[in-house]
Structure formats: structure tokens, C-alpha cells
Length: 158
Image 1 (cartoon, rainbow, N blue to C red):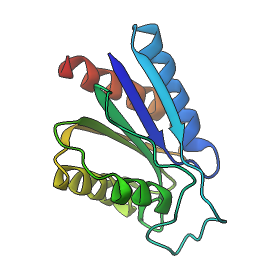
Image 2 (image 1 turned 135 degrees about the horizontal axis):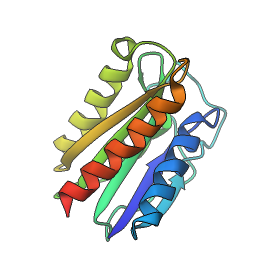
Image 3 (image 1 turned 30 degrees about the vertical axis):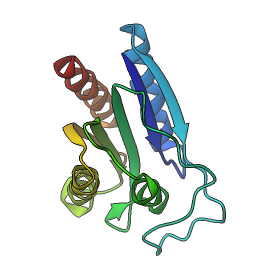
Image 4 (image 1 turned 45 degrees about the vertical axis):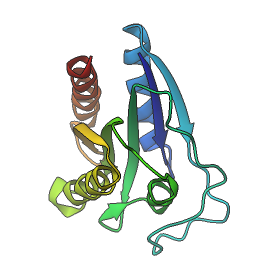
């Protein structure tokens, strides 16, 4: 199985979760490519969409994993740009993970729903979602649960 993980990470938190997901998948025999989106210009947190240097291709992969921090109660602008610029997710299974600072209901849930709606609107097949509340005494457990959830979604898709 080949997985393409496309994520944006401003502070490194989302990247850290993505790397841990990748390690677990690798240890279970899954090939994972991590594409970290880089903005062309400095990130404007108020913008809905921010241009990235590249638009990773998603064709030829069995599953796409999309990772984003929650910015202002919504997905990061670079991930939004990637989704908007990707012509189709037709019949491509995808998983979403989000990192956020506050309670899930203060942006985490909305972010996952937005990513799901946009990708399904382009024909994608939603497999599941995970999230990590970064400011938590139980952050380590939340990361572990998110990684485990992604692995479970992948196993079910085989």
C-alpha cells in the first residue's frame, strides 16, 4: 500500500503528528511519502487560501492523508489552497487529521468537516478523521490515539 501524506505545519506540531503516523505505517509495511506544504510568501492567518510552492500529485496512491493545524477555527490556508488546486479526488480514499489548541468544538470539528466536504465534493472517499488537542496534559495520549485511529482507518480500507 502506498500513502501520500499532504500536510501543512506552521509550528511543527502537525508535522510531529504526521511523522509519528508515518513511523507506525512504515513499521506495518506501508510506504508513506510526506509532502509538507510550503507557502510562497509569509503565511497570512486571516487568508482563507495561501499559495504554496508546489501542489503534490495524489494520483497513484492508495490513500491520501491530509494534515492541518486549526487556524482561526478553520483549516490552514495552505491546505485549503492544495485542495482547491487539486482537480479531482475522484475515488481516492482520504483520512484527515488536525491539531488544535482549544476544545475540539472550537475549530477542530469544523476543520475536519470542511476538509471532508471539500474533498468529497471532488469525488474523494472519506475513511475517517483524528485530531490532537495540543494544549492538554494528556497530549501524549491524544497523539497516540490519533496515530492508532489513522492506522485503524487504513486497515479497514485494505
